[in-house]
Image 1 (tube, rainbow, N blue to C red):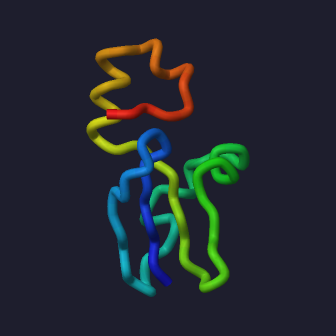
Image 2: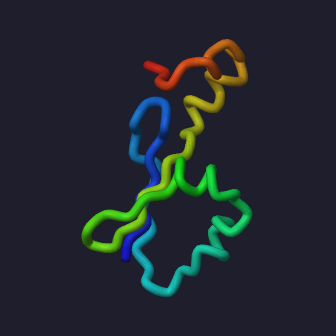
Length: 76
């Protein structure tokens, strides 16, 4: 099982964890409520986990431009 992280705003691949022994509790997923879990986490047919997060560039853009929070995608 691999865990793929991708930015929700620009689509950039943030990272990949390839480790069969990682538990979701170690990654903090247990702290998400049901709505957040459905919005951020999905599985593919191979059993890989896909996590939608935010990259550093988009986070900085959001901090500088709070009105961007209303948009689904940010183009750099």
